[in-house]
Length: 409
Image 1 (cartoon, helix red, strand yellow):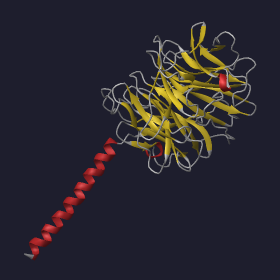
Image 2 (cartoon, helix red, strand yellow):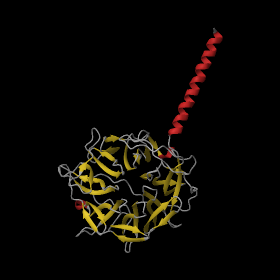
Image 3 (tube, one colour):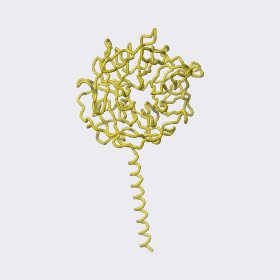
Image 4 (tube, helix red, strand yellow):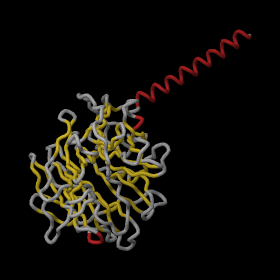
């Protein structure tokens, strides 16, 4: 009997170990894995770089910062970083968005923080100012779709309004929600013309409005708020209509959300060890990136089920710090899961691109999204930095009742 008891005990112990191994193996198999690439800086003497977005097909954008100026860039995995020319009279520029035709939009200014800002477009290697609405002298461009229609804002302070730049025309978004809430700035546009951004409620100026407008319609609408909160900011929109952002009480700290026409607003679980956050970009499958925070900025990926710290998805000993500084961010995700943002690489603040290392099944988009197809990298990641930065990173906009311009240069 003792022999049988000992055998049974060993069998149970071995079974438990095998079960644990199976669980760990299954978890490892389903956790996204990425290689991280240093986008770098345009000129060897530049102080830092920042990544602000990525096109559906994987063209990254951002800026390279140097003493007395900053220069916009585009980036691809095979071609690397390419500097974009500055607008005459504006020595600070940032590229905020690109489409897969290589059209890039952004903002040109006289200071890193957006003084005298103008909306600009880069096409075929040349830069030009986007047309401002009649009577306007200030503006920015935050997003562009496949038809080269861009959105952003014009003017500033209490006069700031959302704007659309299409062809030779710049127009103010005048459509309001049913209660009169209006666009202050537009942060995103998808290929079907759905525009998302920040709105103001004239009946409650302390409340932020996550506002949505479908071009061609007569009225805008808002995405609502998470339970216990009363407003939101809408930062990103996918081609399948997902909207992401942050929901908050008045101008308090926010919580990340994903919204769809079918499912409404759903909270995105916070990354471990964080207490607040903001979703910044989403692809057609509903994969979301953004920034959570506690003492530091924590870039995250949400795959429709789980929220991951980006620091946990890259190879160990990569030299990248994505969890112990206030400069890190994740601001763009492509259809194939390429993530673009900013991190600290061996002590230097640089833009990065995270590329999935193995393909995943392409899901059918739903209110509770699952995984999307991912590409295999073909280049070797940069591992050795060459400069010591004095970065001036762009911060996540602070909700306020009468916002001033939120330029990105």
